[in-house]
Image (cartoon, rainbow, N blue to C red; front, side):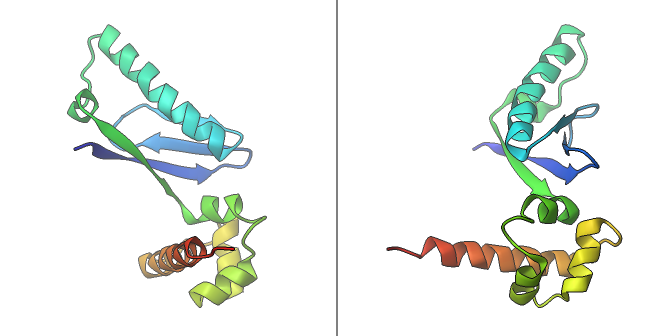
Length: 135
């Protein structure tokens, strides 16, 4: 069974950035999330090749099968979906005040773990509902 590798994704001032947990020294940036996913996949291979060529230790997880799991920070996620999901809509499905969501989106404050779970649960529920739609 493949090991899940966590890729932490966030938004910087001008682009998206990611790092892979357990792979020290590896960071990627790209203009879009789609580009970032490609850069991470290709970058890991490049980084591991460099480690092996330099006889540096390679974390054990990279010697077997692994799958990348992209995990967003709230600020980056809200920025990525801002044209699709308004803060008002997100407020309705999460029960979190729109102003507070705005603070999260702008990076002025960070949500507590409970708030993050609330947002994640609401988005997963929305996704499940959308999957049941047919025409």
